[in-house]
Amino acid sequence: MAFLNEHYLKLKAGYLFPEISRRVAAFCQQYPEAAKQLIRCGIGDVTEPLPRACVQALQQAAEELGHRETFHGYGPEQGYEFLRQAIAQHDYRARGLEIADDEIFVSDGSKCDCANILDIFGAQNRIAVMDPVYPVYVDTNVMAGHTGPADDTGAFSGLLYLPCTAENGFVPAVPAEPADLIYLCYPNNPTGAVATRAQLEAWVHYARQHQAVILYDAAYEAYIADPTLPHSIFEIPGARDCAIEFRSFSKNGGFTGTRCAFTVVPKSLTAATPDGRRLPLHGLWQRRMTTKFNGVSYPVQRAAAALYSSEGKAQARALIDHYMGNAQVLRRGAEAAGLKVFGGLNAPYLWVQTPPGISSWQAFDHLLNRAHVVITPGSGFGRQGEGYFRISAFNSRANVEEVARRLVELRWS
Ligand code: MLT
Image (cartoon, rainbow, N blue to C red):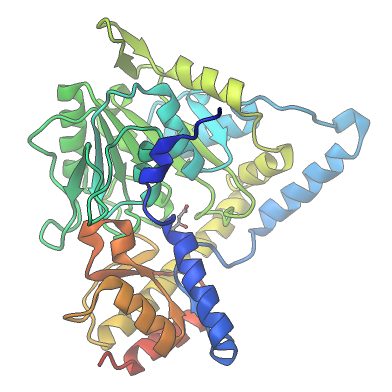
């Protein structure tokens, strides 16, 4: 008899975005005419075409694959040297951060890496997550059996939730109690909040004090506009001994469909064995990648490397400026509609307070049915997300201008 993984049965009804898709599909089926005006600002999926430098690199790499002399079969599981070197050089060493090429592991996405990283950690770790939180951090720990069941509010026992509220600027202080693995995400999905250097220093200090590991998701670092804000956890002294960083080409290069990302595991980072020794995690992640992954395709890695050319950098910058321009349009629209808005200044997400007496899912349904706009209900990201909704700035300019107009016109009662 085969048994299933019963931890999956603890998960809430569905992953947030499929649940939104289900409701939107039902709406479109019921109101096909209104569906034609639908504007999607829910999932943070890019809308603009790939930078030309990436397209050209893809075409050239495809051509190489068509000739015996330049053909590529299996590549290195951790990524081709040309891409690991470009990442380490441009994203780290050029900014004064000592990251070696072989500390970069290229993958097909940060979502997968945030999930897969649990393979190299013990089941006894106490996990800390922000609330609201990118659901992948929580759900993958549930699947791995690192939590108990969820309560009525959807909070899982065994997890240490760090409330992110308007009062703390959606950046929680370090907790009084110890945790072993801490997920941090800045610029934050979903709140759009960013952490200052002093706030990250406090986390690095905490992690070192408790011999904990910070899992730092910096997928949106390219959206940081304020020059005083850190882009990488490795800008904080001591982080090489207590942090892993996840980065992605999805949101800066428009690679959500193309798929390429990377994870930085410093060789100086260690974790404990049950008998009290400390061993490096780098070798474990390398072992995991070489056993369970066959690498990102050659053309895609060539396309990612093209983002580091001077044309690629300028084209990626233009993409980010476009989405950040959208964020400003949405901010102004939501504020003109009398809504309280957070985020959207160093991140492509706006975190909007629902009008009094309206829950997150009520706001979702109201915006869908009355304004024909899809947003993400804050409660889908955790208990503290109730009373908020997230608007994604990933869209065309014409669409966000229309969303801003509809927000201003919308009546909530
Ligand atoms: C989101 O909308 O939160 C993002 O698209 C999630 C992701 O990048 O996986």
